[in-house]
Amino acid sequence: MNFKQVLKTIALILPVAFFAIGFPQSANAITAQLTKAPNVPEALNRSRATNVVINLEAKEYVGDLAEGKKYHFWSFGGSVPGPMARVRVGDTVEFHLSNPKSNTQPHNIDIHAVNGPGGGAAVNTVAPGETKVFTFKVLNPGLYIYHCAAGAIVDHISNGMYGLFLVEPAFALPKVDKEFYVFQSEFFTDGDKGVTGFDINKGLAEHPDHVVFNGKAGALLGDNVLKVKAGDNVRIYFGNIGPNAISSFHIIGEIFDKVYLEGALNGTVNSNVQTTLVPSAGAVVVDMKMDVPGAYTLVDHSIFRVAKGAIGQIVVEGPDNPKVFRAGK
Image (cartoon, rainbow, N blue to C red):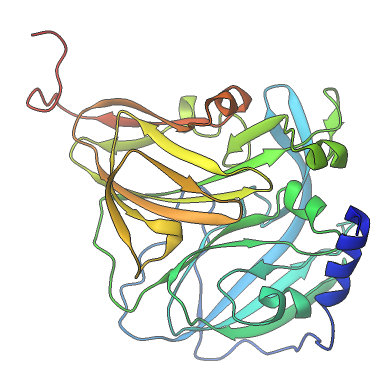
């Protein structure tokens, strides 16, 4: 079976025997807070499950991919990555997906936290000008990827349609001082001048022009570095869409005190980890205490990807800590 036949098969399987059902927004539901990277929604601080409404819009737009390079992005919420959502295990989520008339493509959403056909994608494909709704119960805590699965799938993912969906466990995670949302993705561009788009042949060859954090080169550098104070406990929710490569996530000068492997929040937690692997369409949660002031560099330690944009910084401000680190004798 060739590549085009595989895509046609996937496109046929997803919608079989399912249709989108419209649900009115529940009167007693709360509306989920959605935040753009690197910001994280506030901790829920509630002990009971409830009804949650999430409203998300597909948006096609032209934006910056790298210095001097524009790209025709497809997105959720007008940003790449799309906004982060935060719910609790046991919640019932009423998900509204809209596609403005100004868009050119049909879109949908596959949420890896959903137990149901296509992660919801089988029932929510929206043409330009449409809105569809589906409802699901959140059964499994963890940090999950969401992405578009419409059409050929690969172009929707490669153009920027993905984000993170956090499902808090019934028990509260340990509190930290700062939380950040970081997402890695590859881009395969069809030129170097003007507004570029997706080159499927580069995707098939798995040769990205750009590998970036939070949607563009430099998104976590310069004025956009992540800032914390010395002594802060920091948590990073990290996702990797690929669409092809595994990420070797590492912070130069720090050690992850805790790693919630593959985003599982009630599973194995590793300690004292230098670099953690994050598969394509996978996620991880890492905690660390920032003991010493200075600049700490986030990288994909598949190190040539740094030259393609997979680099950012956490700047730690505060007094020196010579008991942990000092220059000279």
